[in-house]
Image 1 (cartoon, rainbow, N blue to C red):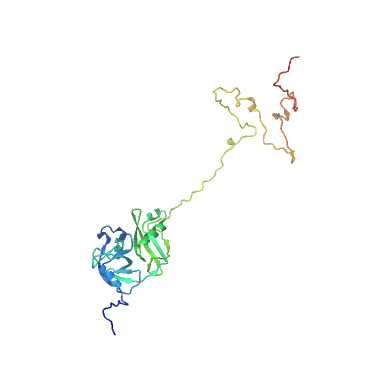
Image 2: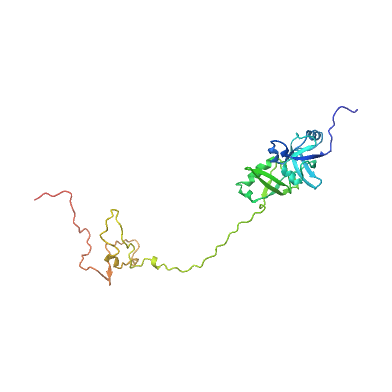
Length: 298
């Protein structure tokens, strides 16, 4: 009635072990572990986990019983020495662990993350062109997030620390294949730029009379220079024409819409009369013409 020789999986039991904790720096060339949130466990842990009815992906809670500090992580490999685990250094700082201290590991099941809020620990994080994309790329090496943890993110050979202020829907969440909204709080030590309001200066009236051309002046007064270096024969500034007042800016009050007025000549007006009365009035087509062909002699 009973069959023997078959291994029956252990049902309803949790993985709960205590190991000596060491930082990843004890291993050679494992910088990939330092950049993420996963640990390295011994092969015996994998053997025990396969015999337990646990939920995948494998997520664990690390607890320091002495300081009552805890965090959550995933597992990367099962190649550590028996009785030891290797974790990132930033995780040791969160748990207040020293090299070789005891840490308790227990497998857990976490909810899928929907929201997370981070706070950079230095204002230089704002120097990154696209900080959200940098954070998203760095979180690919993490399996879960715990509120209160301070993560270490490396970008352009520089390490940036990020504090997890809040996660939803719980204190610890899984970020494996999830659609999570991310927000940033103001970095620690950041100060809003102060914009000083300019004091409005009293606007005083400025005398611009010397800039205005009076109606009786000459707009183009002065002397000019020739390109060949010769002096001009007429000095406009000292000429008598420059001293004659010129009437300008007088509108034509007799203008009628649809008509054109051509000004044939303009003579200086003195006391309502022209200066030269002996000049003849203008006559159209009264000039003399010239012919290119010479006329024959009579």
